[in-house]
Amino acid sequence: MRNGNRRLLGAWIGIAMVVAIADQLTKALITRTLFAGEVREITGFFNLVLAFNRGAAFSLLADAPGWQREFFIGVALLASVLILWLLWRHSEERVFCWGLALILGGAAGNLWDRIAHGHVVDFIQLHAARLYWPAFNVADSAITVGAALLIWDGFRGRAAQRGIQS
Image 1 (cartoon, rainbow, N blue to C red):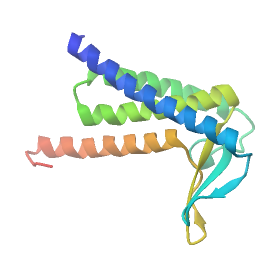
Image 2: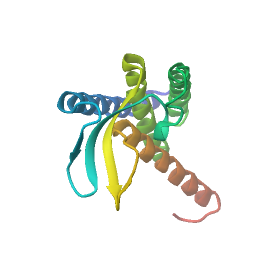
Image 3: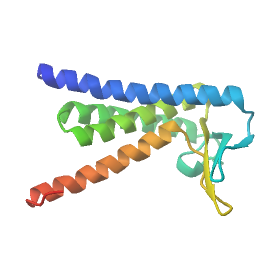
């Protein structure tokens, strides 16, 4: 690995660490401020609520008999190894690596929760017209933005291959 690539890899890992730390700090603040299930209305479409998610996105498998914790820990660890390898191989591809770094940081934040608490702490709740989006957190937001960047980068890459400017 060239020295420049090593530096870029370090920067991408640094971004992931900032995301994971921000995620953990916000979760610590919320768990010290709210009790489980408490809802604080902030605006007409945004609440703070302390929720514990033993499942995956949208509480998928939250009611499973307990095996899901180890399963999601394993998935997060495997994904993290794959992401680190991709960051190493493609460290000069900015949009792609931004997406990967955000996903890695979000995965690390939620992984920490699963290992330390057995569940993920969620606290952001959006709603409109009595329809409520499932609660989420900073890590989930980073994963979502990271995935959007990967999709965008994929479309940009295809356009470049065809000689189309994006």
